[in-house]
Amino acid sequence: MDDFYRRVCGFSGFGLYAVITEKFCAGRSSVEVLEKLARAGVKLAQLREKEKSKKEIYETAISFREITRANRMLFIVNDHLDVALAARADGVHLGQSDLPLAAARRASPDLIVGVSTHSVHEALSAQDSGADYVNIGPIFPTATKESGVAPLGVAAAKNIASRIRIPFTVMGGIKEANISEAASTGAKVFAMVTEITAAADIEGKVRSLSAAFNGLTRTSQIISKNEHNLL
Image 1 (cartoon, one colour):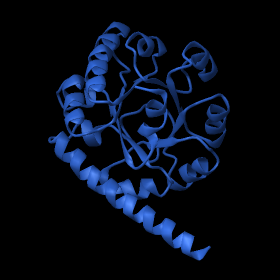
Image 2 (image 1 turned 120 degrees about the vertical axis):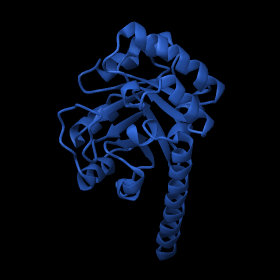
Image 3 (image 1 turned 120 degrees about the horizontal axis):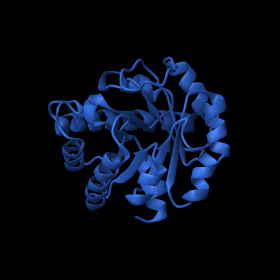
Image 4 (image 1 turned 180 degrees about the vertical axis):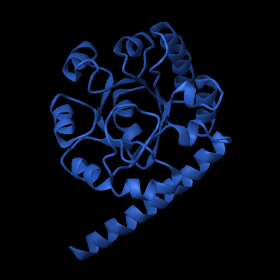
């Protein structure tokens, strides 16, 4: 993928950022879930494994790379810069306790580098250090991330988003039922785990979410038109 596609297209417009952890895949393999997401048209996926060995994560990443390349999907590896590089992923996503962003950028200038942030300070620090995007969260209560951070809530997330200039995603307890509330932060890309990976019908769930995103797009266009008319 060329640089423009990797760095821009995955984070423009309303869409889904699929975060895949095998223990949240309802008994299916993470590769099987990714294949279903690819068939459904998802264009941005992250491999996030906290309990597997580095070798297991690498082997899964190789399979992810084959699938994502065949379907023109952006592929991000959580935490492990070495795995991202070895598997030729498009990017790496770092937590606050992972390799510092500046060091990751020096070691991998061509990778997309995203950072999990939980405050204005963390988000601005990531932006100033060269992050391509930040994730803001958790927005709502969630059982899939043991970060020790209490849910931020929509107002705090919106405040963080208003202070940064780079693309951002939101995560944490986001479901189809609260997608409009999550979108009120200004987010256009929504990182989801169990809402999609544990769904009985993954492709059907993606179609339903896509319809919700289309609704958000129409609402955003109406608001922009009304704001323009007031000028």
